[in-house]
Length: 450
Image 1: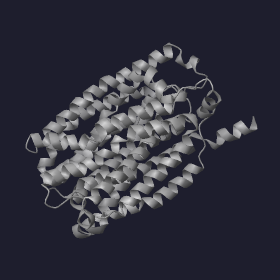
Image 2: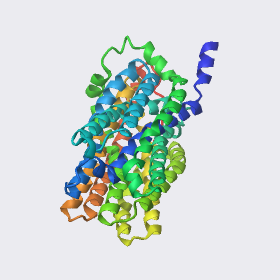
Image 3: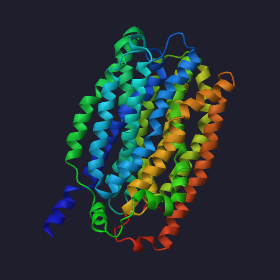
Image 4: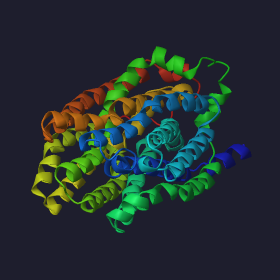
């Protein structure tokens, strides 16, 4: 009895939430550093100067996209380890993989130095990043959600989601700082510093994560492993494939839409409208800071009125703001551009923060890591990685106009509303059918309001 009490105290929900936040912040910092560099510098550093500008931009975003191809593989591999061995071990491994790959990117030679080998090495390291981030999200979410008090899963689950905004803030802030040294310094060595700095962040993250313990849910899962001897991915694809599929489309705007209003917006503003890189980076930094501040409050609102309602409201906001977000770019007004960046990030916070707890409710504990990772990472592969490429391509069909990507963002958001409501229905059906009674492990806090 004493050991159990001590263990439970050592896993306080706030400590677990902070560990999830710290780790995901570092991993997303590395990930967004690549996204930012792909938008403003990789086309010049890793591709030949005589390549047409539009093709160089597409090629640069393509290196960003390939990282998403292996994210489902990372979700399956680390989901299996997380469901069978424990959440903590996977989080240590993924952090090491991501940090090592990012540091190596900062040391890569340019196209002018080694030719075609430069983009090849960049792609290889990006694939390593993809596998790592594929296993990161599910474990971080579950460490926070499964340790949350009853009725507070959306709030504590949002801490793992906050890692995205913290990582984006650190990344855009680092690039904004290096931009102060001037274009020549930035293009030659300044862009490397944010990648090399990730080594320090990884050390900090490892110290935090190695002191972390798994959740009580994981202890119960281990106790029932003899009864649950099937591969987690096989069970998920047989029993919960509808939940996975609907989860993919419910997440589409939170993942792919995010890159449209950040990475593509940055490329559109600098390449098409010739706006200041520094001005846009500062705006994105402000938006990331707003997301950091409002996400916990929106998650608390989700615990109070129902997380699905908050997500649906956020998706509706994206539909309304998709065209104005790009329309104000043509005015060149810094105030209007920043205002729309902040408004868009606010509504996106409403759909990104609560979604972790919504997905966790959709799967039984012994396959939960695999289930939520599949939904999230398949979505990122389809919608996230190719969103900037698709946006550039759609825009090129209309002679560089912004409206095709904006309309596509609206359509995906409308589909997301329907799928989010379906996730709620599936969860309520699971509860009504007594799914919790068929699995001894506690299903964790119920986050859905009827």
